Amino acid sequence: MDKSFFVYIMASRKDGVLYTGVTSNLPKRAWEHRNKIVPGFTAHYGVGRLVWIERHENAESAIRRERQIKKWRRAWKVELIETDNPAWADLFDSLSE
Image (cartoon, rainbow, N blue to C red; front, side, top):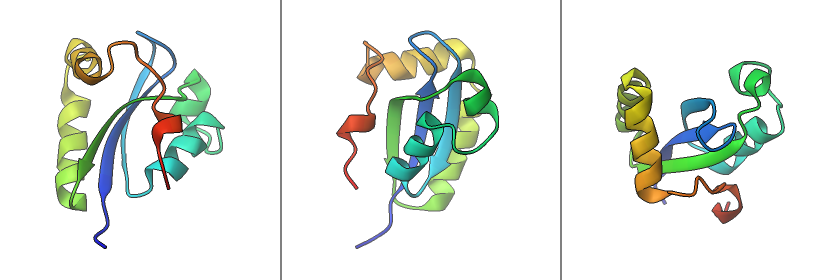
């Protein structure tokens, strides 16, 4: 089975603080954000709601996409989230390990 990589966006709440990241273990990484395991931006701003996910076949494409999204204007990120998740629902519970 090939390894997957994920670009994801976390939010503090609807229209709140956003964080974009990349990982190969999304359930674990999202759990760490939610539970403020690692000190830093997401812990400081209470960013714990997983609101957008994009799967990639390799690390290079995922990292490239993450960097692209991080350069975007906030409005573009909000549009990206609301295209697939208009209610800004927390997608964490839909993850399966």
